[in-house]
Length: 294
Image (cartoon, rainbow, N blue to C red; front, side, top):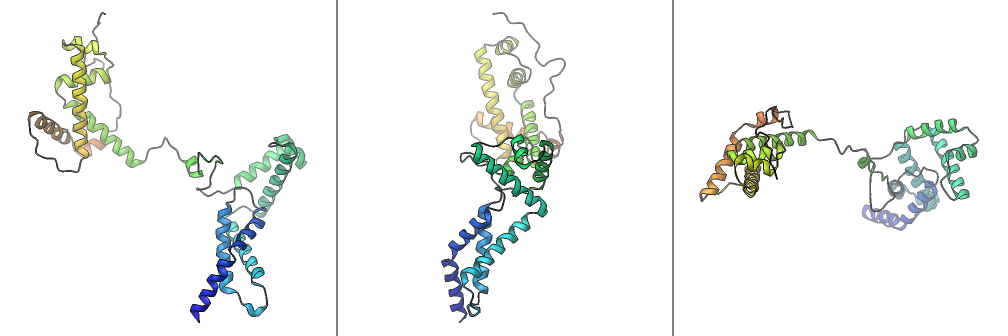
């Protein structure tokens, strides 16, 4: 008997799902535009389920009438639960929205503030106060879409998120990476270190560096490429969880030794404790300024 009743309830629910859409359409016109119609439909569907379970056909009430009341009640309960604004504010919202829609239909455009004030028979200052009261009372879900542009689906949480803010965990990771880089630069072979510091931190040109080290500019370019490759290998090794194979060859052994030196230069506490994020160019630069004539 229980299985039969359960089957009847399911059949009744499926047969009357269009009734939910009909009730939502009737009720939604009384709510502001920001109220999510899909949320209303979900609440109405739950009301239909409850109505199907509680319906007693012996009372002689048609199911459609009984269910419509339950669906409407479920929708209203959901809206009231999500809206802490007093009844007076909700009435104000409907009044302002109705006036705006009427003027928009007559003018063919969005009405201005003076036009709205004239329509409502209030001063511009009074209308501004009314709108301010209304705006302060509106509560939106964080997933409420703020744009009608289909190509840019922005929700309220996207708008409120501070993109410039850095999470604490990200700040620590950046600090550790920065100090790995600092250690790695200090451990570079001398000529590579001079090129990196002079070129990237002290603003020296390739000509300046070539004159200082008494080499060609092409050699400076080569030293810069070698230094950057060493820095990349040395730092990536600190984040790799794979077991490194035994290096073979002089170059591979030298790079492995360099990577080990970067890891051993300081412990994690020291790296995270360094707060400075900028390289301070000393008063007397590492490389003297040399005037290079063309």
